[in-house]
Length: 255
Image 1 (cartoon, rainbow, N blue to C red):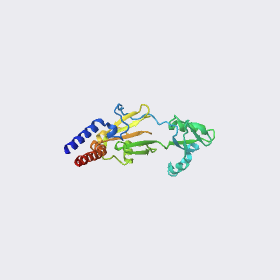
Image 2: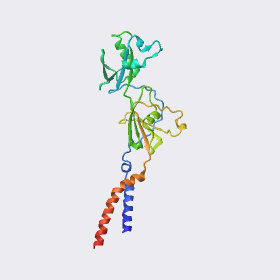
Image 3: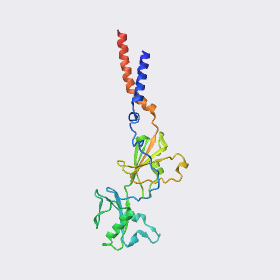
Image 4: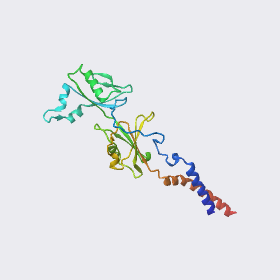
């Protein structure tokens, strides 16, 4: 009986190993780039352009921003600036509804272009208007552990680096590969750029601009741990096989 049991176990293991694809052994694997060539990284020279559904913060002052400056401290009053800023949503058609101006189309413009446009529009109502505009919902998506852990991280005004994003996500997991970190940039449904980073040593980081852009996807590859996954796949089959063999054994002995 032991030989028969071992025979069936061997057949079962071989069948699962050779018939199971990565979809079975790594069902949580995502953003596979095996059929995509990696792009050569170059520091981005393209400014961010406002998109529909962006949330923007707008602060307006007169006299070229005179009230935003503290004369005594000779510095920008950040607290006063934040109090004066109001957040607005860019609508589906690229327009934003602002006080006094009504709906203005700003989608497709850089932050500098949008500020200039609003200042020109406001000049009809105020003296030397000064506009500060920020996109406050820029974010990146971090996936670690082969897709088991996911996190959305906001990009602050001073931008965000790859190292900072990984640190904010809690660092790398035990199974993560520090030398296989992919950054996917652009619309994933079209033809995004895929960059491969190695942050294992300081030498690999030298001369590399790792600043992130809005909607970047960071995917950290992990070790597949096939043995554990195979055992997880085998467990229900082994239990079923043991039950069947036990029934056969009892039936045979009963006769």
